[in-house]
Length: 81
Image (cartoon, rainbow, N blue to C red):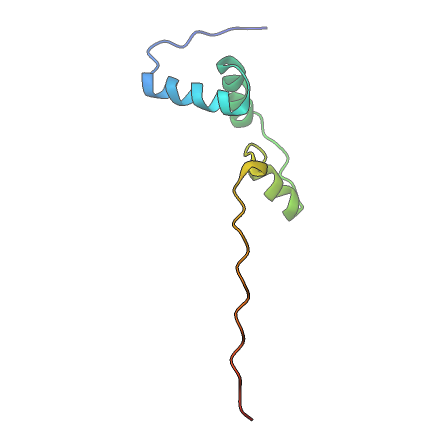
């Protein structure tokens, strides 16, 4: 396997990379490999709409999103005929 060194990397970019890798639960090196793989290796586009939605939100932890409490249903207005 080949290795590369990246010099003169902006501190803000490195910081964002560190945060993103932590969110994905991997090292910065693994995160860079994943980013390069996604950009450079063409993927087959999913044909199913549900697959595209799943792929778009796969990295997000949607199980931890807050679910608002349900509100009472309002009484419909009375209509005269």
